[in-house]
Length: 353
Image 1 (cartoon, rainbow, N blue to C red):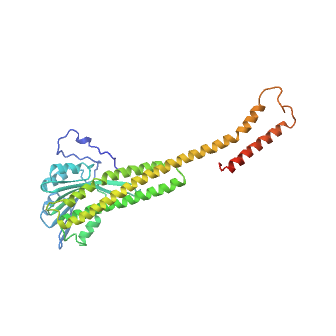
Image 2 (cartoon, helix red, strand yellow):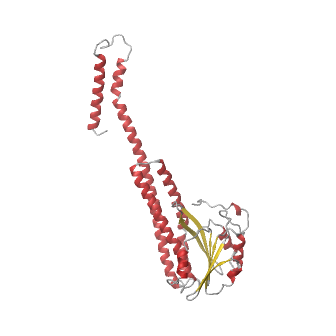
Image 3 (cartoon, rainbow, N blue to C red):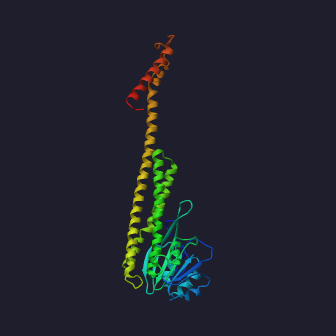
């Protein structure tokens, strides 16, 4: 999981519209995939030269997906070819953007976080930027290790559903829906972690549990930072009055808005569960400490009479009663045992032990 605070030190002092990549250093080559389709025709290819994208401009519906944004030259070239504002390109290269939607003259810019889980059930985050215009969509992905868009590609390839019959606004909805659906899976996994820790804590608390709770709290904060602003983005798309988003598609965005609200509600429930489980942990520790102190107190109390008796007969007075009595030692030992046993059974009767 990435740091909760983004680092933009590279851009300090630079003027607006300066194109500088702000993100994890990568050496892999950027991959560009193009899909051009309508209800009848379909074409998919990997782009080797940026100029190839221009050939499909105005042809049916074109979806260009760029995997990796660390090569500033390629991003700048795409921006010139498709008349993308420099401020959009700047935000694409700043990979710690807050989810948002901005309207420009020629297009609409959307940015959000794509979340997934690795083999260790840890959250992996990458920024996804979308440039939407009539007839085409360009998506920029920060990572190059796959995404959640494969089901959408399969639907386009196999002409399943209504995706090839509708315009670019429905494609945008489909991609956003795929990203948001993944949020549900992540929240379910985190809820399972919390339930497991809770069941373990009820049995016995360990220092490891506190570390696990702290880690999940960080994940919850990161999720909140990534998901909470998305509500505004989807709401803005639902109310968008541009020619790109049609009235028929706004119904789908309304459904997407409901999903977002549901996710936020689940996230708040997770935060409450974490607070409750922290209280359980601290309460268990307190009970454990009280139990230890109680046992030590009982042991100390049982030893008070023997200590008192031994203290009396340990005084260095010449004329002490029973000092020279033949059965003095056995008598004192038997008396000590009887007193201690009497106190023990009394505590037992009172259910103090």
